[in-house]
Every structure is written in structure tokens, then in C-alpha cells.
Amino acid sequence: MIPKKLQQKLEARKADNALRYLGVQNNLVDFSSNDYLGFSENEVIFNNAHEFLIGKNIKRNGATGSRLLSGNHELYGLVEKQICNFHNSEAALIFNSGYDANIGFFSSVPQRGDIILYDEYSHASIRDGIQLSNAKAYKFKHNDLENLEDLIHRHSVPIAIGIVSESNTAIYIVTESVFSMDGDSPDLIKLSKLSNKHHAFLVVDEAHAMGVFGERGKGLIQHLNLENAVFARIVTFGKAMGCHGAAILGSDGLKQYLVNFARSFIYTTALPPHSLASIHVAYNELVILNDRDKLHNPIQQLYKNIQFFKTEIERLGLKVFPFGEMSAGQRGFIESHSAIHCCIVLGNEQVKFVAKRIQEAGFDVKPILSPTVQEGQERLRFCLHAFNSKEEITQVLKLLATFVK
Image 1 (cartoon, rainbow, N blue to C red):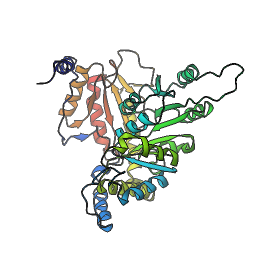
Image 2: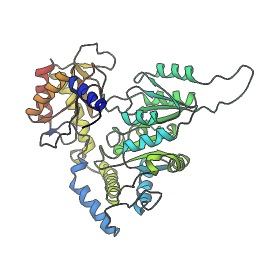
Image 3: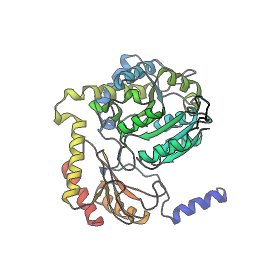
Image 4: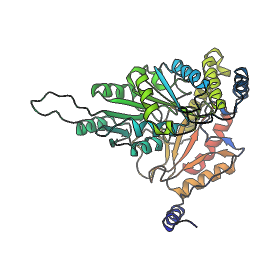
């Protein structure tokens, strides 16, 4: 038995055909995971992580406590320095997950009287962290810099006439370099200029750009040479890196502040040595990718698959709509240049039906339901990988075409 109010909420989800269930892993062709480079099943990374621990004479299963107590084992310093060097960052602080990183940052850094302006499609972890903050928060229209600047003007503290003073109000602008539900990106160059113009602090979540974009998968911020324009970057290791954890990149001062005030960092058991070893070895693998020929470089192969996927969409007559140009009731793909491609299929019942038929044919494609996305924006989410073959891409899109043309 559970309280009546909880049961009513479950019944409402059932009525909306939106009740979530825990599934089991399957042997279907993977078009759903975030393992973009195939690192999670890379035997070289697995074996090298084990050998690295043995070489360091580390034979421990757990960290034994939080990093401020007994859990700050020697691999933390080594890996955080490695992350700084790779990402051209003054400092890095590892968190147990991307969710913990965003919760820790947004609940502690913006202060009472500050302003947070965040993209309306920001990830749940960002929004949850913002809810825990004492700052005032306002969302701007997705990737709409005019709307963002309007909000800046509307919510900035005006200087009284005849009084020269500097406001203590800090403005934080929050976005993602690749959005997890649409696969699109903001104009980060214009966004950085806008942030600089208004003396705002730019925060960018690079979860779905890490390992995919830029030289050796360093992310879009470095690809665009914007490291110095960004106050904080969040990079995660559970997607293209194929392991677990996350890090916040920024200044030494930001790191020191987070160590003292980010509750999701302070009050949790640290990651075990094996997790840090996996991160270390995965970064080493990214470093050597450019030394490989294109046939054995997973990032290059991923790019080829993305381009082939887009070519097949066009060949099969599936519609692609630039963001904002899809009218109500239309079906089709949202334009994307990333590894994430979403086809709008209206309604929870219909999108679940199409996903089930595709899964029955051997392809793991997941439906994204409302309320995870807005009602009327239900979709099939295709995640592309370096290991997907051209034949698999063609087959899954042919199946889709039978339902959405």
C-alpha cells in the first residue's frame, strides 16, 4: 500500500499512457544508448583500466567515504589534472554523475538576488538544481538569443538616476552545447558575445558534445576556442566516454567554492578507484584517436554514420524540419548535426506503437513520451554510434518510413 495521493498520480500516468517501467537489456541493434563511440564495451579500455590499477598497486573496491573524509584517493588528483590538460581548463572537480554535478553547481553557486536565465529545453538535472537555488530563474525560448537579451534587460537591476554604483547581482546564462532531446545546438559564439556584453556568467553543459565534437572529442566549446568565455563547463563520462561520473571545469576559485558549498559533492561517498581508472584510460583512448587511420577512428566513423543517416532520411522521403518550422500536427525529423536525431510522432499511444513495431523488427529505438517532452512533441529518438552499419541505418529508416510518411 502507498498513500492515496501517490496512487492517484500513478493512475493518472497510466491513463495518459505515460507510465514508466524498468526494462531489461536486450540484443537489439542499438539505436538508443548514449554510447556513441562504443567505449562502454571496449575491451582495450576495460583491460587497460585493470592493468592501470594493478600497476598502481590499488586493490580496493570502494572509496570508503566522501572526498572530504577518507575517499580522496590518489587517482583523483591524477585524473583531475589529466582532465584540465585535455580540456584546457584551470581546474576540474569530479562529481559522481552529471546529475550530481548540475545539482551541486546550480543549488550552490547562484546566490539570493542573482538571476539565472536558462534555455527552456535544459536538462532535468539543470532545472532541478535551479529549483534548489535561492536565485531567481527565468527560462528563455529555445536557442532564441533575442528573447534571452530581452530577459536580461527586463531583469537586470537598474542603476538609479544620478547614482553611479555597481550592482552585486550576478547573471548566469545556462545552455547545453548539444541538447539531449533535439540534438541541436545554440550559436555558442553569439551566445558568448552576448554574455560578455552583459557581464554575465556563461554555463554550458557539454554532456552530448563530449567525445563527439572537436579535435579528439574535446567538445564544442574547445572546437570554437571559447574556453575563456565560459564560466563553467559540465562534462560527463557516462555517454561517449563509456564509463561513469562527471566533472565541472572552471577556475581554481570555482573549484574551491564547490568543494566547500556543493552539497552533492560534500555529502556523498566518492567514486571508487576503478571508476577513476576507467575515466583515465578512456581519456587516453581519445588522445590517441587522431593517430589512427579513418577506418579505425570511432569519431570519424561516427561522423560518417551521421551524414549517411541524414542522406538516407532524404532518400527515403522522410521530412526534415529546421527547428521552429514544424507546424502543429506534422511529423518528421528535427534538423540535427549531432549523434541525436528525433522524429516527431504525435501522441504517447502512437509513438509507443511505432517504437514497439520497430523493436519487434530487431532495432532498439526508444519512444520519448510527454511529460518528458511537451505534449504534441512526442518522438522517436535515434542515437547513432560509430559501430552502427550502413545496412542497419537503412533498414531502421525504411521501417520508420512505413509509419510516418
